[in-house]
Image (tube, rainbow, N blue to C red; front, side, top):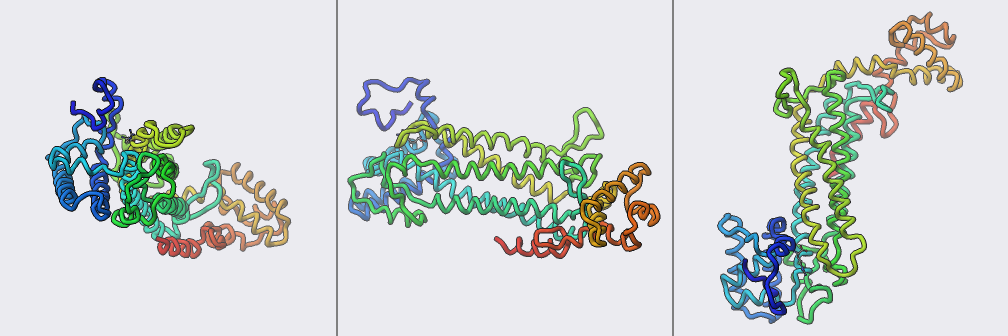
Length: 457
Ligand code: ARG
């Protein structure tokens, strides 16, 4: 076991089990690149301010470069006995370049270092996840574009309610995703603050140039309170919350895909490449990708709760509890990263059975509201019109037919206001086409929404 870098005031080494308990390197090793980039910026600034010599700067820079190369190439692997990735890299640097390496940590603490590393890492992650959101967003838009006229039932309480189009239905998820993207953008803006220079909690006496470090690392601002900077994990929680809400949306979409791919609905057929079979039932084709997405939402919600609970009640400033932030947020990030391409591929490759959708829309009295609206146009008060339409539905149920199958005389028996033009009024295409208010399902309205959505990002 290598000696930790803080042994000075201790009489004996760390208990083996405590060392394992205390260590975070098994999960924070993934921060090595960010840790090295942060250290390079810090080094440049230390030399620029005359705090370390040019020679030390060069030696540190050279050493960090080599460590980065070696870690990228798999020639240097994190020592599981090192406490964390920060200690590992610093110890390795000192092993390679000697005393210069021991000057790297001047004016810095692991507390501001880890706050920096995590911001740098999550900044890249947010960009990557944003790309994944956008790919799903655009996939939904392009399918919607092809189905502006594909009539399907809209549901409430999972009962057929009123006709909509597949385009309109899919565009609901596009709106959810637009908010997901907006949430990521909002939180990345708030995360864009450089904490180095906060030290352990009380800043530092060295004349650091914090603005320069922020500039090198591409941050637009520096933190303004050292105690907050080292103990703030709002950015982690905000990302966890944003990802959790995305998983709510993904899970709802997946639930629909699961229903739609059942033989009972048969609205869609999932591609073989995105479905799995059963080990016993030869006929089975299961929507595992959608089910896994629905299932994995649980861990992403759990991670958010982990983080909120971990931070709750922590006194200022840094506390070791906060080391627990990484596994939770990394798991959320990894889960969403896995889910996005699978879900996008599933949707891109599914076959859509427009006939089944049309049949379902035609069969569930989804035009009963339109029949009532028709009577209102003829001067019947809405409540009476509702009653007449309901009685006609009852009549159809007994005869096992749809409203549009009734003869004019059969309808007239319930209201003298019904004329030949009723058939046009309750044709599903017309029921949808007349709903042109902004936000409605009429093809031209959805097309406008689609164009707006395409131009949004
Ligand atoms: N591994 C630690 C973490 O992830 C780094 C900071 C440790 N700071 C300290 N004072 N022990 O939070």
